[in-house]
Length: 493
Length: 81
Image (cartoon, rainbow over all chains, first blue to last red; front, top):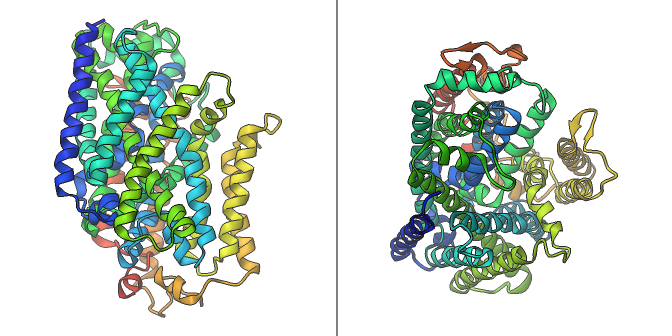
């Protein structure tokens, strides 16, 4: 274990760099909401790709993913390929590009705003924002809990949990509050490049220390023959497909990802990102998950509550490098949370505060409320994360956070119908989203309900329910005004 | 046919792209290698399939952006407003 001072120095260094980037971005920011939330729709290919990527899977790439590969085998790489390399790329075009076109034409900043306008319905706008915030709040909490715990581990207990979580919250609020999306996107890009570099360095280091890639794989299959063969154990076809589909569709409606569909400067940016998506998935996840699986053959023992990657790196690489990776992972949790804070604040101010509380608030006022919103949201998740585990009933929130992807996936099929089917109606949308969310929540919280029907995960069935209800209710109700449907290029013919 | 009654230049091309995307989805996991544990050049064969498939997907997506972008999303109608 490296000196806690060195590890904390690395973390402090990262925090200061992030703050500096935020300050530079702040100098370029003008007051209005479109600039604050979307950097005035001016984001180029590299930044868009990396900011979406870093936002999406950062902490999972370093901790959760390798842990899974360590315990169940490296097949998760294939799930990631199907999920993010193929399915999400296609949704990037089918949902993302269309949202970008519509958003550019009509100035939308959030998903709820877009759907609310399409169906001329403040209720739908509020519902989409409300549902999104319901899943977002606990998910941000999980990031703060993770970062707080990582700091405790990194400092050998010198920094208490509450102080770690508080420090990170304050830094995030400072640079998100100051610079908005531009600062977030820039720090995410640094983060993404850093993650890729560190992972490949780690592979090279471990491979050269352990006698090469072939020896690592032979050690892995020697220790657990099932890890070499495709499938088996946790990995059934139904499970792999359900994970890939639910998460890919969930990601597309996750506020901080969905909002990125509005950010691109021009179509060329979306095109390049679309084509590069599978390559980036390949470069990032193959090394991360292979390291996790290889660790099995190296006889790595992971203590309770620890993660396999830091343990492996402590064993096979210099201590400062292992500390750098842990610091990077912690920073990655911040880069996920900062985007979520910003998006959560925009959903709150634009889709709940403005339409329901202060309909005549001006742009300057909204920009100010947005910044306060970031601080309030972060403070609330921070307080909640301190109280979790204290038996105060807040453990419900942890359950919610860990099932968030499925919760967002229930929005995606109605969204697709709204984008492409002229027959979609307001009651159809509200009914489809509300029914599927209710069914999904019931399955998350009622132990008596089964995990799967006919061997397929309940989240998939809830998605099917969202589709069936939206179509059925739309079929028997009157369509939205033709003018609004035409804005989306779908006519009410 | 879209709202303004403009027939897409080639519906058959649309279907070919949909079929191509469907194949990319269907074989992202090499089902025909299920249970296979063959190792080649230090890694399981199914992992090499993944590497090749992601590269192929990237090439296919690139071709789509060059030749078929704007298909199926009513781009012209939205731009016209």
